[in-house]
Length: 79
Image (cartoon, rainbow, N blue to C red; front, side, top):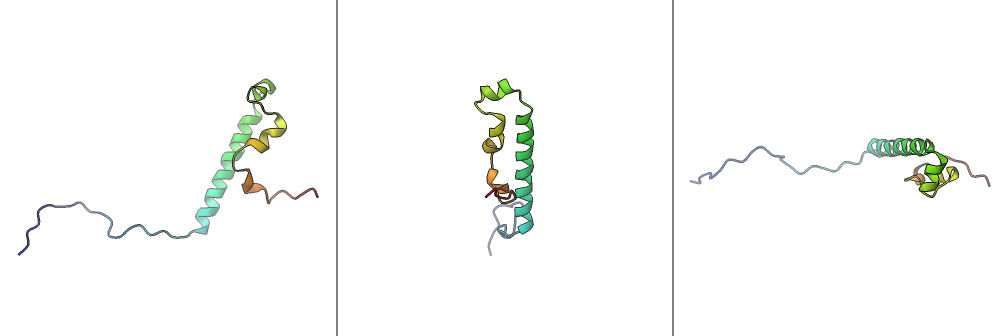
């Protein structure tokens, strides 16, 4: 006969399964796009002297914001 030495708390019966979810990818991309938009808005509200302090111009705002590649396909090429 075996003896149980201790009691363990409830835990997961199996490891969490990774499930591919296209909706999750779209949602994460949407959230990233929103964060980028908020960042651009905040930078656009800086004065010209504040922009000069961080060494960018108003025309550089779109180029320096992170994750610019997520919307590169939505803007048609001028060529």
